[in-house]
Image (cartoon, rainbow, N blue to C red; front, side, top):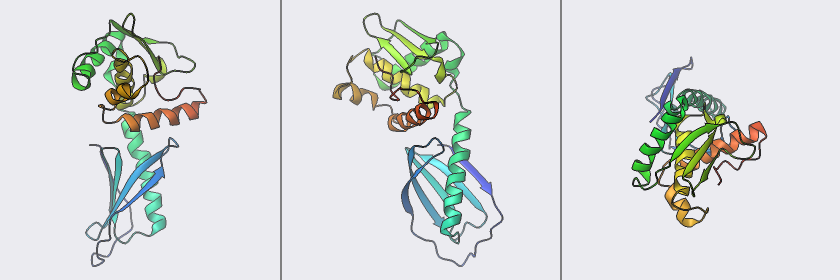
Length: 208
């Protein structure tokens, strides 16, 4: 779980009762929609805290905040938390060997160790794909455009390609395997936003 807290100058009245939690869907800085839950508390006076709870962003704010202040701080915490997460690049970016090791770990964790590639390597950016897999010779190629994405995004791409070693097509069986990785939908959204920002044609998935 990622946690981020910061302090601002507004002082809340401790006698104000707590308000009900509110769920909403908002766009993050990547331009993709994100599930946000805002929790107001009368005990909270000077801090705003945000953390990930699965695919949801939880923002804790003082009960006395106005709607405009709430909107501002939700956007601010989205931006800061995304920046923090983006700095956590995967160790797999270091080399092809590290990439292969990460695939082995992910296969054991999410695919029962049944997807074992013969080789995994970084390759120059591909025009329409983040990565590709050739089941016939069990090779996986990953675009160098992904070297600096958050580790959980790269992990999704690797799980996606590993699943192709078991199921070549993008059918229901394939997606059932991929969605064993808990951040699948969030990672797809991240890649779609990145793709749109870079004006590339990829779908956000590593297609074969």
